[in-house]
Length: 106
Image (cartoon, rainbow, N blue to C red):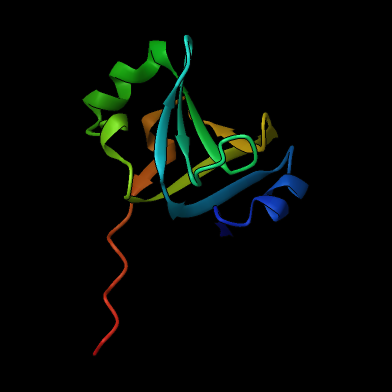
């Protein structure tokens, strides 16, 4: 399991199949893609990309891509390099919504 916050390590794992976990920070949108960014700097962070044509399949599976900011996610797939390490999610089953991390005891 890899940490989405460690973009430097993930960059060294390009062309390999990985499970990556982290808290999604922002949603970015391009003409063709929806980007789930795991840091403010989308040019260097870990990102999940979803083709807009496939967004309805994610919605039907209960994943509202635009409502995932602040959520803990696990994604599985091939790590590639496009403005930082990225996994293209082509199927909703690649993205798993995780339970929030427990609050530390007082």
